[in-house]
Amino acid sequence: MLAVEALCKTYHRTAAVDHVSFVVRHGEIVALLGPNGAGKTTTINMVLGVLEPTSGTVRVEGIDLARQHSRALERTNFAAVYAPLPGNLTVRQNLRVFGLIYGVASLGRRIAELLDEFDLVRFADTRCGVLSSGEQTRVALAKAMLNRPRLLLLDEPTASLDPATARDIRARIRDFTRRDGGGVLWTSHNMYEVEEVCDRVLFLSKGKILLEGDPRTLPAEHGRASLEELFIAVAREPLSLEVA
Ligand SMILES: Nc1ncnc2c1ncn2[C@@H]1O[C@H](COP(=O)(O)OP(=O)(O)OP(=O)(O)O)[C@@H](O)[C@H]1O
Image (cartoon, rainbow, N blue to C red; front, side, top):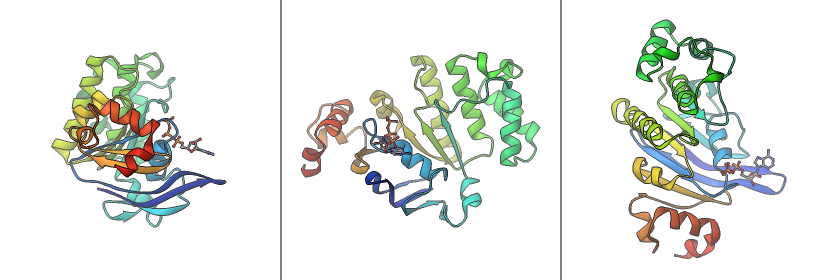
């Protein structure tokens, strides 16, 4: 689904992302973890084509993003808490605007399906700006599904949601991979959530991938009791893990 190879982004002399390589397979949810400043958002922005890599390649279903930008991006979409939809537009208007931008066929029907699927019918004519965080997240996910993406990039999709709403959102994303065979690259600072929902984790530290594996077995493999402890170790003493 996604193949990232030797991806680098350098600002002046700082390597924000330093030779990062990984894949996301069909039907797989992969978490990109790491402390603040590790390079997660920079990586996601390069996969989304909004930031040009200093070097390295990004392929979406085999299509090279640098050479066939539009074809690669047709298969991709994105949701993040820091990129809210225009608050002065209603839910339906937002879906329409983004649907037109993406060139979605039979847009009226697609919007009706998504309003139904994301339990948004009663908010269709409500301005997004007055919705709760959970409702806005559902709208952001509906928007991300408009073009029937194969690859979904989610930057902290459940941040600021209550546990019940967060569980509902996780189930919807899990559905996308199980039912549609889509692939998801997910960032989160909630290790409980990552253990529950992700098939694989990648730990980034200072722009490099330090560890990779199953979130349920990786902590024990590195002598840590939980994913959270492993996360703290990566953040505090990355060199000790590199040697381990
Ligand atoms: N435009 C830029 N110019 C200079 N440095 C940058 C720029 N963008 C990012 N960086 C630096 O690159 C590094 C990685 O940043 P990035 O935002 O990718 O981290 P992150 O892992 O997403 O962090 P967080 O969890 O805090 O969102 C940081 O040290 C950041 O200061």
